[in-house]
Length: 110
Image (cartoon, rainbow, N blue to C red; front, side):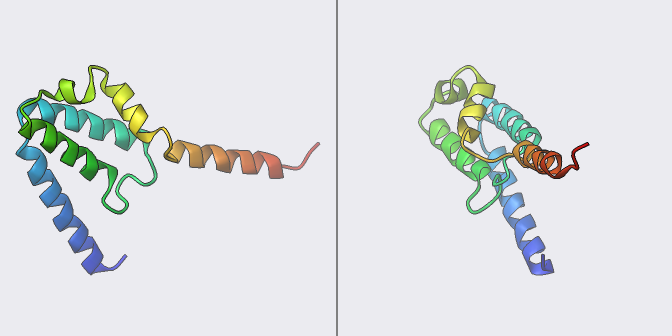
């Protein structure tokens, strides 16, 4: 990764964080919990392209501008909302499992 790409990435992230801070408090709390959850679960494409986090943020901005509470927008089960978002995404856990399966398949048989 080139230095220019790193600098641009940091600028984009700071702009993203600035947008999060403009959300109502309930949205900020839920957004941060979703972010923590997704960073733990680790969808591989979390930040690729427009990125899942940016899409969630835009969705939250729309809900807030419509005057809805965050739980009206996503439902009362935040984890289920997250799981539904990434159900078709490959996670780092999936990649790890694949690598273990490959090693087991290549292991010499006794």
